[in-house]
Image (cartoon, rainbow, N blue to C red):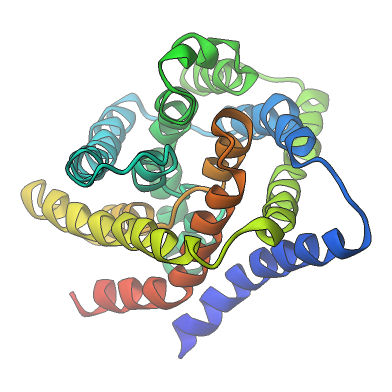
Length: 294
């Protein structure tokens, strides 16, 4: 019960913001693509730089985190690719919806609440590669082959690289710059969730089955992959917990933003992401219970 209440404390604002966006559509109309571009070209770069530039990153730990993070992305993503080919699934949200998990807005506060500062630092390390996978493979999968150069035009990718260089080289950053990136970046999650909720008004009931399948595969394959990685790498304690929290997360909200901008599947992307958020209310307490019992 305690863990369930903690999950609700984290997930309720997410659902409330999406609900606000949904209700807003009955009052006023807006263009979701405009807000999607605001996220991609201003808010996301600020988040990426701010989150990385503030870290004290050990090179050895980073290399281990990159290895683990690549595995927990590649295995589910590869299985999703095989399934899409075998089943003839043409929706572009399918593979990235399973490949790219929510590596920040859900696991960060969960790790802090459940495992303290050490847990948060481990989750942050594992989420670093996710930033670059999201803004390279994520864009390519949503947009298709003609998007091969698009990631290099994304400010978020370069902001992430700059933030990582600053963290690894311990380069001092002026406080006014960090305050700017922090203030700007704080707007990312409310804006993307509000836009997600607005888009939910256009989803169809027939999308539910597909959305449940994608969200279920994302979380289910994530759990199986985390179990395999933890077993073979003999991970224990906080690093093992951080691995499960990241790997078992629902589809990233940025999947919706990419679907809105690159593939004209905004409504389906919104359905997939929101279904994953609701599913995580049930699955995350189960994952925490599993970690406690094992």
